[in-house]
Image (cartoon, rainbow, N blue to C red):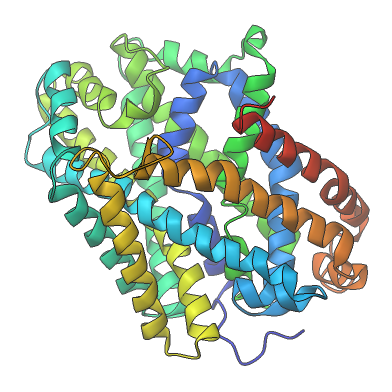
Length: 453
């Protein structure tokens, strides 16, 4: 099916950077470092890289095939690629998943904006108890977290309404290089600290005694989370690819960028943490409670440098979050725009309002109103759990089954090989992985996250 009459990315580089931006986000700069710290460092990284190369890339290609062949929003794309309207439910689930993720993700992104403001204002200069109390007081505030969450969605909305080329592609072409430059600057600053070598060793010298089933399953789950598999994001972006785009090559490029950013994030955080004796397994609180203390102690003799590093770090976090929220917003925008036959601006407004409601409720559930709970969890924690441990694995699992067993193989082969002109030699390997390896591994992650194995 030709993707004619529909806006596409203007350049191949723009397509790669925009789609890489959907993968590169807080999952790399926040989630990857603390999971690496909890799972033993280099051993976890090696398994993570293996999972991305062997399973993440085939999963990305599968969603690319669906999106580009159909040339439509995710719900319609799944319906077009296989007989039976039931398959459309996968796309609808992806739209629903992305909406929930954008809602609660905007809360964490809003925290980044608050900490950026606090860093600029010099408010993060106290001891450990002060920083921990600052975070608690902020998250329990009934107004500020909601304000920043809505503000972040508003910034995202501004980019989305400008369209694919003038909005998503243009902004991604600016954000991604800026993000890389900031990362490199912060990595250099971190690695030059006294005692930073211990942090580098932690990341680059594997201790295979740390290897376990939990490490493998955590790494596999992080690979799927980081690459946005099962959210309809990759499917939606692929609908804007040109017919000449090499899907397998693009997936490899995005995976390499994603891994590169994640490892750089580790080199930014752990050398600084080890230089001041901070434990690498500080968990999810790493960037909001632990790191402000790291910056304060590591650069105690150079307070001006510490101030600049702190500001640059939270700028980096905000930019990383924005590249992801843009992609999450576009999924729902495309869906409402095409399925309701309304303007793109109206579709974006519907998505924005819905996500703002979710974001405000999630922000309030973090302390201002403790009654906003589901199954014993705050609404934010429940949304995180529900999407990452149920909806995303389910989406990735059913997508692999669809491509492997139900879509006519003529379509899959033509899309994968660009009609027999590229990567023909590895097509059978890809098909085997999608049919047998991906479903088994995704099911293993699902059962592990559910506490069954």
